[in-house]
Length: 454
Ligand code: HEM
Ligand SMILES: *[C@@H]1O[C@H](CO)[C@@H](O)[C@H](O)[C@H]1NC(C)=O
Image 1 (cartoon, protein in one colour):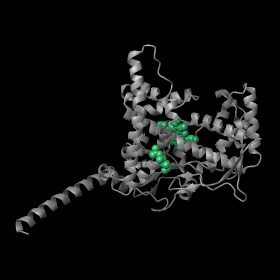
Image 2 (cartoon, protein in one colour; image 1 turned 90 degrees about the horizontal axis):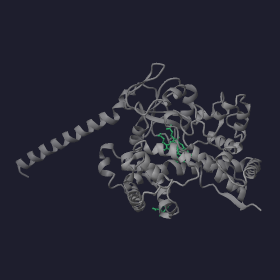
Image 3 (cartoon, helix red, strand yellow; image 1 turned 180 degrees about the vertical axis):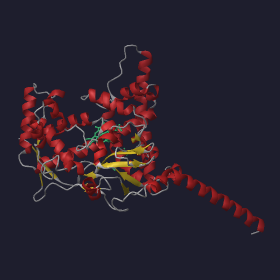
Image 4 (tube, protein in one colour; image 1 turned 45 degrees about the vertical axis):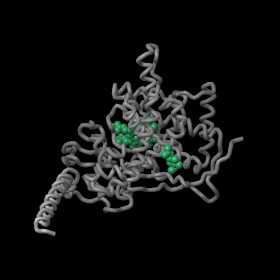
């Protein structure tokens, strides 16, 4: 190797090293800089811990000021429960759920970020108003590839988050193209788009040519209504449909599994619920409607009690600050910082719930009846959110799909109970939930014995 070569090589390497250093410094400053600003906060839990369930519970009762949770990818600020009301009511521009998901779930590559809030309005307004309708046209809803895509997406996208977690952020634009799970979800998105395109094109044609054409009542139309022209883009529709699927399928399935586990394992509950459902059907000429569903207060109580003891997360109201956030006691959550609250612990607060560890199926029926003012009964409903009822979040971004989910669950549970008897195998009781870093999942490997009712 000649001297010149060595020199060239040397210079090239220096330039490369400087470039890399520059990029690293930039990225470090942008994504990890806040970690330095947080270093003064006391730690909650230890890095690498399998789950933070216990730490979050301890903090709920014992910590009065900000803490730092060393989660796998970055530190997250824990905020004491007394601030839930003031913080959850803040607008997206101050504490952002979109930024939080974009960075924590690598939304740009996994599709798990909130693209815009039009689709949230679609659910908040239209889905809630049209509870009996389907999300997508019937042909598509019955297309097994579509259904599979929607179900699989959540699972694979969470695996893609894991894949991306093991690479530095700045490499994501490149590695996301090669990582196996990232490729699968890109393929899912493409297939969803291809299934939606002909439906959208046909609707567009009818809108343009047939003045009597009325858009069918489904999420495709509502998305166009809320988004405008951009709603016709099959790629946008696919992204939004996937997000709706991610937000609704597994959450509802988990809630149903938990409720069923609790119904089966608590003596007498099946019969009382069955009777309530049959009586309500009889009083409504054999048909369920929104008002009849709403009168199923025992179902409501069981569903809420089940969610109280087995919510899907130990945390709630995960957000990212867009500017320094000064709390009412003077403490500050710095700009560009992820923060969250303990939620599972709040559900077991003995100052709100008597015998908090006991599954009492009629707890919320009794709490409703104890209210002297009828208007106050609402706060004990399944869909009610509050500082001690965070299963659907609370405040500005509280789950807009909860009214739909609540009715859907009653219909499914009611119909299951009318048709079948359930029990666990001999010697098997209600399975304990499985704990992730902050998730709480029903053990779906549990065997349940089912037979038709006579
Ligand atoms: C039992 C079932 C469900 C549970 C436990 C659940 C839970 C949640 C939770 C905890 C949040 C976050 C709230 C926050 O950050 O403050 C949320 C948000 C959301 N959920 Fe649900 N959800 C359920 C069903 C559904 C359904 C059926 C849909 C759609 C039809 C849906 C659509 C959404 C959307 C779009 C958001 C984002 C709202 C926003 O950021 O403004 N969810 N849900
Ligand atoms: C969804 O996942 C299941 C199980 O892994 C698989 O059999 C199926 O082919 C997947 N569906 C699609 C559309 O990729």
